[in-house]
Image (cartoon, rainbow, N blue to C red; front, side, top):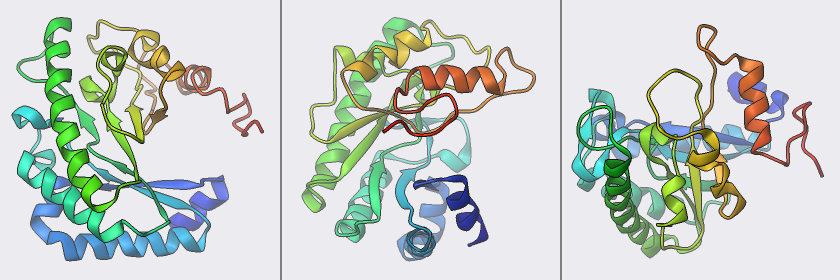
Length: 234
């Protein structure tokens, strides 16, 4: 509980609750929902909302994963969101459902721009299937859909948006030297002018080419509601 209290003291208004696929399959829904319920109780006590994140890393449409703890199946992911949306459909403290933490890509590294375009179509088709399962239980929830390449890129939305209502697109603009063919502007800067975009993770590295202050400055450039002191602009 002391962590929730401290987050409130930082000024947090919402908390991301990551549920690993491995934990869902190992412990089952009763144990997982007990943990979420306890987290929600502490969040409510300190005037914060939560959003639930199915915290996998990989490419669900082709079931390709690089680490065991993030491994899931399409069937398991559909089951998770069916059960979760049934259980929390009337809970006002659950602000969003984040479908999958970090979609990556299919095949070998590095992907090409052409293969990423194809992967987005596969991801879009599966995401819409998951959303339809949620909507049967919870017709009004806001659903967060991550971009490809570890959620770095949602540029595909410009040509192929998710064809469902109440959708927010997630990006994870971490610094680093990984190969990638698109700039931040290309990956999500243009999209956020037309669609709601949520930075659900970001970070920095003391040994990378971007330091914390530079990352903060870049992120704020895409979030006009935050001024340079970190305070909300009315």
